[in-house]
Length: 232
Image (tube, rainbow, N blue to C red; front, side, top):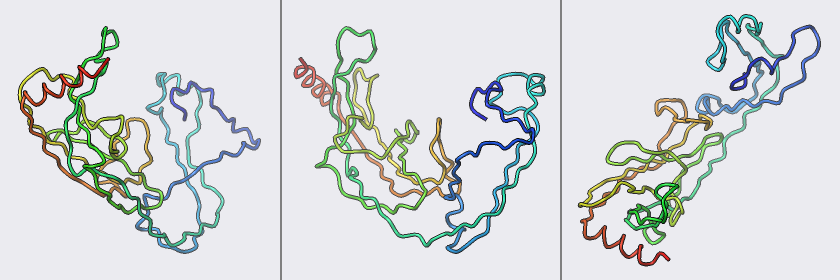
């Protein structure tokens, strides 16, 4: 059922043929169990009675809508699973992180840009790492600051416009912080608010490293000052 559907996406079960839907069924979740060979398959779908989490009305409006519930089983169809060919992906990953400074608009209504400390890595501080790639799986990265998760995105890139971290709240004082970057692979297809369970089928950590930064207030202020002077 589409998100926020109010009964517009309806197919009447009156005996007439329903237009075919083009659908896909990723098999990555059974990657380790589905051995190469020929199979005779059926697709079974069950829709239980009772309103779904996406329904915006109450129980009465759900019952009035008359949504179908039950089980549908397809006709049999052949499926051939071929032996997987080993694949790899080579990434340029950090050997160390460093602190720099960047002028940004901290708030939309700020009259001018402000220099803030940012964490990134350069090509000179990176190394090529070759990681295995499994068919049907999705590669992403988790980022931790002082042991606490703070973002998930694609694997980091050297000299990328997107920094590893930005210290918007920094005012003064020395800073000691450590970052952990974990690149993982998941059989779960990415979606809104995606956060796959490490215990789920197909989840695998491919690369993980922890980086330590320790800077004095003098070192940080010098970076900010140089950036501010260089910004027109």
